[in-house]
Structure formats: C-alpha cells, structure tokens
Length: 453
Image (tube, rainbow, N blue to C red):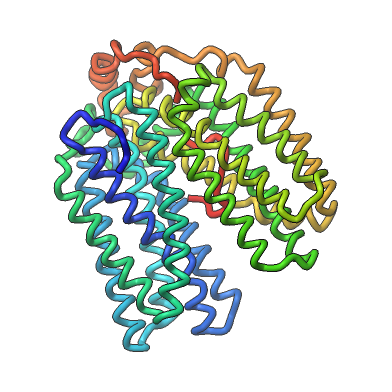
C-alpha cells in the first residue's frame, strides 16, 4: 500500500489499489493477446494487428477520455470502465475455454482494452488532487508510477506463466482482477463533476476537446515541459530499439535480451519508489535538468562502453532516474490545471508524450539500418545533449509559476466548451491560492518503458 495520507479516509489507497489491479490485468493481456493470435492464425502480421489496435484505441480515445473525465463523476467513469472490462475479459475467457475464439473477438478485446484504459487513466489521474493533501501530491504521483511498473512487471510475468497452463487462464485472472478493482472503487466516495462543468453542453465538441491543448499552449512551463517529454520519450524509444535490435542481430542470447528488458522495469520501479526522497533533495526544476543530462551521459556510455551486460545496466539506470523528473512535471501539471480542465490536460500530455514513444521503433529501425549501432547511439546522444542544454537555459523551466497565480481558467475559452470560465477560474483560484509550493514534483519527462501507456 502506498504510504500517502489522504484527505478523506484512504481514498487514494482505494484508487491506487484498484488501478494497480487494472494495470496488472492490462499488462497480462498485452503480452498474451499477440501470442494467442499467432497460435490461432500462424500470422505474425495479424498478431501485430492486435497490439496496433490496442495502442491506436488508447491514443484515439485520449482527448474524448479527458473531456468525459471533466464532465462526469470520475468515480462513475472508472466503475463503468471496470465493469465493461470484467464482461469482455470474462467473455473471452469462456470463448477460449470452449475453443470458440476468433480473431474478431480478440481484436474487440484489444479495442475495448485500449479505450477503457485511456478513460480510467484520465479519470484516475485527474482525481488525485481531490484525494491527496497538497503536500503529499508529489508522493502520490510517484506512487502511481511505482504502481504502473509493478503492474507491468507482475502482469507480463504472470501472463506467460498462465498462458503455459491454459490459454483461458490469463483472462480468467484478468477478469477477477478487474472485478476486484471494481469492488474497491465502490468504496471510494463519489467525485462530482468538476467545478465549472456545465450540463447541457456537448461533451465531445471539437472546441471542448481542444481546451486541454489550448490550456497547455497558454502556459510556458507546461508547453516547454511537454515538448521536452515528447522529445525524450521519442529518443529513449529509439535508443531502446537500437540496443535490443542490434543485440539480436549480433547473436546475443534471447535470455540476456530478456534480462535487459527486466532491468529496465526494475530500474523504473526502484526509481519510482525513490522519487519522493530524490524530489526533496532536488529542488525547483532540477529533477528535469539532472535526468536529461544523466540520459545524455548514459546513452554515450551505451555507445562506447564494452560488455554484454552494460547496455541493460545503463538502460536500467536511465529508468531509475526518470520517475523523479516525471513526478516533478506531473505534479505541477495537476496543480496548474483547474479541476474543470484537469482531465483534458492530463489526456493531452499523455497523447503527446506517448505519441513520441509510439513512433520510436519505426525511427529506430530506419536509423539502425542507415547508420549502424554506434553512429545511431552517438547521434541520439548529440541530439539529447542539445535538448538538455536548451532545457537548462529555458526561462520557462527556471521560473516555475506560483500555483495560486497560475491556476486560472484557460484563455480564449468559447461558449461551446463545458466551462463557465468566469466562475471556474474564481473557484479554482479560491481553492488553491494558499497552496504551498511542492517540495518537488509531474506527465512523463522521460519514458522508461518500451510499451507506451
């Protein structure tokens, strides 16, 4: 359980535990689905379709998910998503048990899985400030990162083991995990629609969906921070792909390649657990600067240092450092965004930073083919050094805004959005003007997992 004291009777603990079960089930299905499709069809391309559908559904549902999280009771949104996943996972488990499964059924699960995960992520993250005392917000964000790493590590490990026993077992366990998460969320207090949300206006209007984009664009700190997140996620994905692909083509044992991926996950988990302490040591925007320059140095080390284990250890070290920067940027993102726009701001940041990582394998393959391992890694090191230098000199990251002054209604709001801005800004400022500046604190500034979530 996360050691975070909440405002209202363990609300964050319930949210954390329910989401952890969902992460576990999601990660289990993510590794198992392509393997089942491959066994069913014998086609690697069709197996790849399932992963693509899941990722595409998550990205496409991102903006609508944020709008829904800002308009409706966020607890109810999560409950409906969990209930839908219980039904889908349970149905697929029955079909597999009866040997009646088909490719359309597997694709449907991937589609629902991705869209429902986008909704639960937007609603859950936007809910955190209402459950956690201000001085504990950065710790809660770090514990969420630890939850994600733990869920991914446990889910991928359990998925392979359960699949070896019977192909239906991963989805039986996933169904039970979602059901347990649903039960936990039932004990969470209702989360009424965000202040300023106006009933009767379109939820999914184009202008309403783009409010998150406009809000981030209007705040230099969030705008520059998200550009940094997107760039670093992209280059980390490229570096990871180059390392893994070159290891495989170089004849490295698949077991050792698997250890590299495991070190990445373990490093991220340990880094997330250490993030609260590191945030207290690295004040201001130093977490971002330290992580970026660490990224540069370690990438250069991957390129030039000898040893079969070296790339995995250094990738794990990058993953260890990243959650501290992630926690800093995400916490400020939650502080600066008014509650009426928090879901959309979270979703926009997830889409932008996740999109950079999503196209990284394609770019990594092209770069590796054209330049080879050594030149590719040195090129990434040089570009990341330029990004780190620009971020170190950026006034937006040096002069972090005061929460009370910054958390106001977004500019250029129009009548078709779901916020009465004259009231939303007043309500938000009234609730946060007295907030202390966090000791340090989060959307990801650096990706630490190849699967983009």
